[in-house]
Amino acid sequence: MGEATELLDHGSERAKVESWRLHVLIEGGYPLPLAEKLAVALDADLHEAVELVAKGCDPKTAAEILL
Image (cartoon, rainbow, N blue to C red; front, top):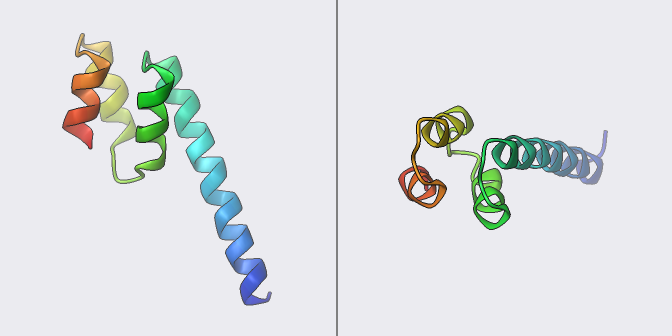
């Protein structure tokens, strides 16, 4: 596999992961702008993000904690 193909495959996988994270965050109660920020921040713990909101934390506050 060539270097360009490997980069495209990596980018494609990352896009899939970010899309899935975005879906989970929106389903978890995050408004779209915050969900987008968290979805691309792969170091932000997705499970913690959803759990914080489920326990009553405001999504904006949760995003500030995680980012």
